[in-house]
Image 1 (cartoon, helix red, strand yellow):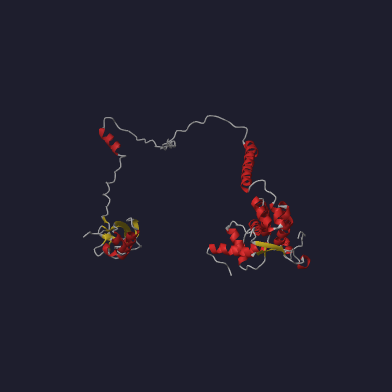
Image 2 (tube, rainbow over the protein chains, first blue to last red; image 1 turned 90 degrees about the vertical axis):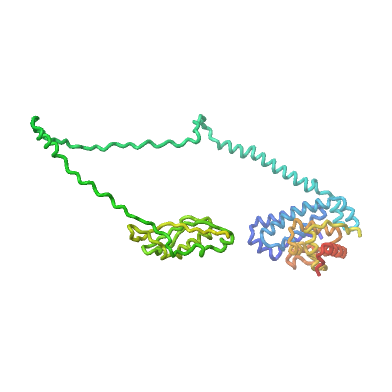
Length: 311
Length: 100
């Protein structure tokens, strides 16, 4: 029963080919270590059993997990079978191996105590690392040449200073000196008048006032569709009302030259869509903008009201 | 029977029992049970030993010649009549019945 069989299984060479050697060796070492840590009565049995079961596992990670699991299994087995109640039970069976196995206490601590000790240990190591290693490294990073001084306080909520005003240099205007020969006799006032009047040029008559175009902005004409015909049923049901402003570009015959656009929303997407449909349907029924009574193409905004009359 | 003691029923223990109850007369190795129950080795082997010590299972070494078989011998586990009865009762109490 206690013979060791370490023959490789048929599947092992393939696994070994795809695994690094250390992985296979580590797995076997884990299993052997775990089995030897088990109660001596079960040690050889578990090692042989686990190595045989390992041979049926494929894949590096699966085999490694199996090995690690065996380590954990050893701890659980040792803990469970150290309980005194097992002794009585197994003694009655006459199973010598299990009996010997149950007579020993292989666990110094319970799993809970062990977990607590491990957690405390990990925290202690972390604290030591932070206190010595990381803190030491951090102090090294701090530059030694530090300068201290007062930083002038910047008043809050102060607008940024205005840029300096641009400097304008007055243009140099060169005025040629005008030399007017004043050859007159002081006693002859008529000559003085003639000389003074000479450089004065005749100003053109004031121009006629600019012609102001009498522009009358267009809009929906008389036969323009009624907004009630385009009122969305869902908006009627929900009592939604509003006024949408639509921009339309029409030619001199009141026809749309481009698709109407929404200049201002009514607050309802449904009403806005209906307003655009209404504006589209009104093509040819727009009143063109006139300039001095003559129709001209133009673009203008107009409002479409969707309202409900309560009866 | 003295060794028929109460076993703490966990989900993992039920999975192991279910693997054996698929065909109660089968002898299964740990690897076979692991394939059927998808339990990790760290969980499976303590359960197998626990059930064996409780008298629900018996185990023996596979009777093969490792040299001619090209593989090591396996440890085979089998349900005892007591284990079969108790496992059936456990599953019946859970309302799952016993697999044929």
